[in-house]
Amino acid sequence: MTAVYPKPLRRLVVLLSRLPGIGEKTATRLAMFLLKASGEYVGELGTAIAGIRGAVIKCSKCFNIADEDPCPLCADPARRDDLICVVEGPTDIVPIEKSGEFKGRYHVLGGAISPIDGVMPEDIHVRELLDRVSRGGIAEVVLATNLTSEGEATAAYLAEALKGKGVRVTRIAYGLPMGSDLEYADEITVGRAMKGRREL
Image 1: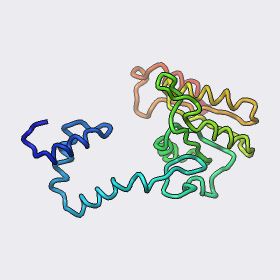
Image 2 (image 1 turned 90 degrees about the vertical axis):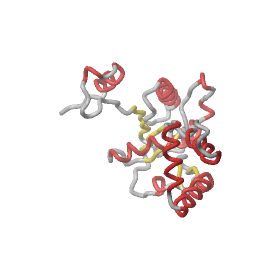
Image 3 (image 1 turned 60 degrees about the vertical axis):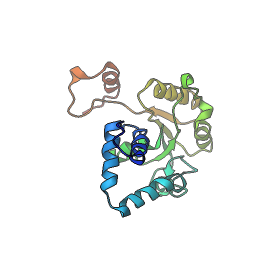
Image 4 (image 1 turned 90 degrees about the horizontal axis):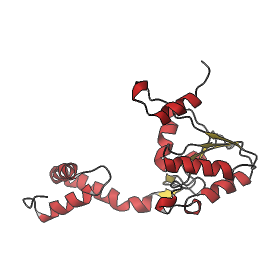
């Protein structure tokens, strides 16, 4: 980074560029924006950033992030208690909710099994999922882990762990996005789309 900028601005750029998806140019642009922004806005932003770790908690039921326990999804009486959708992280819930197709409960694993990265089943919320199922009242567990080698390994592990528990275990079908050309799709996506086909 150029030494033309004063040290406090350079430090801010360095800190901003450590955020995911933010390179030095974007970080510089953001820092310049903050330099011109009102003191009230900068102060409010700083307070929000400083307080985020203490303000956001994990739901004791599903391990989703929330500002209250249980989270609104677990507290909603209109949702189905006999249906659990298992996801890797809190951000995975958003597209499922936006689809409007799922009305059950969630279980956030907090990651995916990845022995190469040192993440084993005991490092994520697998035991808690098995405990939820063992308590009874669950008819189906929908595995919605990501379509990565880690996500697939996690889904396979969970499917095996849930065998004999008296629940239906399903995997979400991954298909082709709207507006995409078949010739540009990878074979895993096409294979998933074929397996997830339905009657018209």
